[in-house]
Image (spheres, one colour):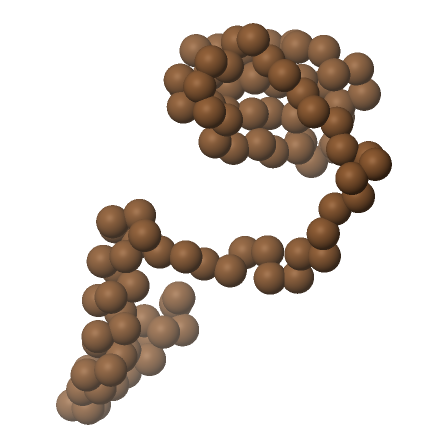
Length: 101
Protein backbone atom coordinates (compact mmCIF):
# COMPACT_ATOMS: atom_id res chain seq x y z
CA UNK A 1 0.00 0.00 0.00
CA UNK A 2 2.85 2.41 0.84
CA UNK A 3 4.45 1.77 -2.56
CA UNK A 4 1.19 2.63 -4.32
CA UNK A 5 0.79 5.82 -2.29
CA UNK A 6 4.37 6.82 -3.07
CA UNK A 7 3.81 6.20 -6.79
CA UNK A 8 0.61 8.27 -6.72
CA UNK A 9 2.35 11.12 -4.92
CA UNK A 10 5.25 11.02 -7.36
CA UNK A 11 2.88 11.17 -10.36
CA UNK A 12 0.92 14.05 -8.80
CA UNK A 13 4.07 16.06 -8.14
CA UNK A 14 5.26 15.46 -11.70
CA UNK A 15 2.00 16.80 -13.09
CA UNK A 16 1.02 13.43 -14.57
CA UNK A 17 -2.41 12.34 -13.45
CA UNK A 18 -3.38 8.77 -14.23
CA UNK A 19 -7.16 8.58 -14.02
CA UNK A 20 -7.09 4.76 -13.82
CA UNK A 21 -4.92 4.89 -10.69
CA UNK A 22 -7.23 7.40 -9.05
CA UNK A 23 -10.31 5.39 -10.05
CA UNK A 24 -8.86 2.15 -8.62
CA UNK A 25 -7.87 3.88 -5.40
CA UNK A 26 -11.31 5.45 -4.92
CA UNK A 27 -13.04 2.18 -5.72
CA UNK A 28 -10.84 0.31 -3.21
CA UNK A 29 -11.49 2.91 -0.52
CA UNK A 30 -15.24 2.77 -1.13
CA UNK A 31 -15.37 -1.04 -1.02
CA UNK A 32 -13.26 -1.15 2.14
CA UNK A 33 -15.42 1.41 3.93
CA UNK A 34 -18.65 -0.33 2.93
CA UNK A 35 -17.31 -3.74 4.03
CA UNK A 36 -17.59 -5.28 0.58
CA UNK A 37 -13.92 -5.61 -0.31
CA UNK A 38 -12.48 -9.07 -0.90
CA UNK A 39 -8.81 -9.73 -0.36
CA UNK A 40 -7.00 -12.99 -1.05
CA UNK A 41 -5.57 -14.04 2.31
CA UNK A 42 -5.53 -17.80 1.86
CA UNK A 43 -4.53 -18.13 -1.77
CA UNK A 44 -2.39 -21.20 -1.07
CA UNK A 45 -4.99 -23.07 1.00
CA UNK A 46 -4.62 -26.79 0.32
CA UNK A 47 -7.61 -28.21 2.16
CA UNK A 48 -8.07 -29.96 5.49
CA UNK A 49 -7.79 -33.39 7.05
CA UNK A 50 -11.34 -34.39 8.02
CA UNK A 51 -10.09 -37.12 10.38
CA UNK A 52 -8.33 -34.59 12.62
CA UNK A 53 -11.09 -31.99 12.98
CA UNK A 54 -12.47 -31.40 16.46
CA UNK A 55 -15.70 -29.50 17.00
CA UNK A 56 -15.68 -27.30 20.09
CA UNK A 57 -18.94 -26.07 21.58
CA UNK A 58 -19.24 -23.31 24.13
CA UNK A 59 -22.41 -22.44 26.01
CA UNK A 60 -21.14 -18.92 26.77
CA UNK A 61 -21.28 -17.89 23.09
CA UNK A 62 -24.95 -17.65 22.12
CA UNK A 63 -24.49 -15.98 18.75
CA UNK A 64 -22.36 -16.70 15.69
CA UNK A 65 -18.62 -17.09 16.22
CA UNK A 66 -16.94 -14.49 13.99
CA UNK A 67 -13.26 -15.11 14.64
CA UNK A 68 -10.92 -17.79 15.94
CA UNK A 69 -7.20 -17.55 16.61
CA UNK A 70 -4.58 -19.87 18.07
CA UNK A 71 -2.00 -18.34 20.40
CA UNK A 72 1.60 -18.04 19.20
CA UNK A 73 2.71 -20.85 21.51
CA UNK A 74 -0.12 -23.11 20.26
CA UNK A 75 -1.49 -23.72 23.74
CA UNK A 76 -4.72 -21.70 23.61
CA UNK A 77 -7.61 -21.00 21.27
CA UNK A 78 -9.47 -17.69 21.44
CA UNK A 79 -12.86 -17.21 19.81
CA UNK A 80 -15.04 -14.14 19.54
CA UNK A 81 -18.73 -14.02 18.77
CA UNK A 82 -21.37 -11.49 17.74
CA UNK A 83 -22.66 -11.27 21.31
CA UNK A 84 -19.32 -9.68 22.33
CA UNK A 85 -18.08 -12.77 24.18
CA UNK A 86 -14.42 -13.81 24.01
CA UNK A 87 -13.59 -17.37 25.02
CA UNK A 88 -10.15 -18.78 25.80
CA UNK A 89 -9.71 -22.57 25.70
CA UNK A 90 -6.70 -24.80 26.24
CA UNK A 91 -5.81 -26.68 23.07
CA UNK A 92 -4.78 -29.89 24.81
CA UNK A 93 -7.68 -30.22 27.28
CA UNK A 94 -10.40 -28.29 25.42
CA UNK A 95 -11.46 -26.82 28.74
CA UNK A 96 -12.87 -23.36 29.23
CA UNK A 97 -10.35 -21.10 30.94
CA UNK A 98 -11.88 -17.64 30.77
CA UNK A 99 -14.68 -15.75 29.10
CA UNK A 100 -15.76 -12.15 29.11
CA UNK A 101 -18.89 -10.58 27.75
